[in-house]
Length: 73
Image 1 (cartoon, rainbow, N blue to C red):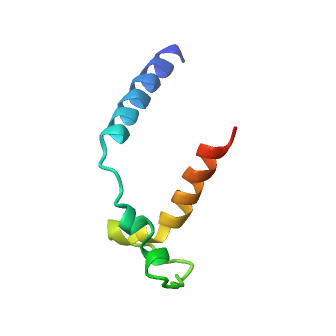
Image 2 (cartoon, rainbow, N blue to C red):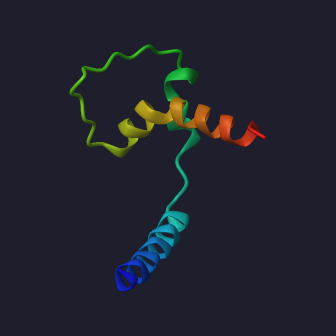
């Protein structure tokens, strides 16, 4: 168990460093549908493969979540 926990810590640190070095998302994509005032309806099983479309689809929720996390005491 101790060996597994030691390995897990290393993997978590490596993953954190990888995420911190990842490029920041384009704010224009995150708020694309809000900026263009476009309404989009997705099917329940829709799985975008294009990273830009994924940013556009999840962007407003991520921006709202970041806002909430930054304002919570």
